[in-house]
Image (cartoon, rainbow over the protein chains, first blue to last red):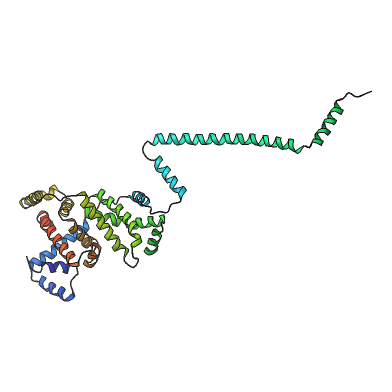
Length: 156
Length: 183
């Protein structure tokens, strides 16, 4: 092994001061062993740069999921609930969960309808009470009097 | 958006800023991790872990320093830790000796039996993990000895020494196998 071998490495990496680099360049003109070393260094870099890599995976969502679990995002509360519901729905036993969600939705709709009906009943009852309360006793007596007068047979 | 602004927004929990950061650096993280770990799934895990580490360390990041160098440090360290935890052992000495012996006997057979890239893959796996990291940062990423030393937290002399040994070992393995193709 030539004692210049290490320096040839540093020379190839442009890590030598100018004077030392010039010394190595001069040495390379005469030393076959170091020429082979330099050639192998060139070859190694070439092979490594030409190496084909597998396609970069699109694991962005998985990365986001991990970041989210770490608390990287300041997500509004309603949105985090939606995300939780979404992940729950998309988890295992999807069919069962979808059926559960559909039943829950139907129950909510029915509850809403019955609430509307009872609201309407309360409204009618209220209007009746209002009508009764708005008539005074004097008016009632006056109306009764009118009724009896009109219902009596006319005297000839 | 410039990097400083982007990192500040990430620090405030801005989801869009994170999306931009991951988009910008995901490829780099995967590429480095793959070249060190030599396995796609492990590289993907390491790249993800690197972003989690970025999130955790972002409050301590000094905006005066270079984000790229800081990011390299995180990815390389995560990848190296990943390999150590996997306890992936290099091929046994006997297998290596056997392949090298075969190569001396009939190099063409070896070249025909294995694709060139598989040979390179195997050769790199023979290097210790800390040699691999130095090799990737110098040969592929083109970083200087000083930058590599800063990323790995080691003296420049150690960088030079590891690089020298890694190249020598690769040459010892590849030269007899690749034969004429080497020159």
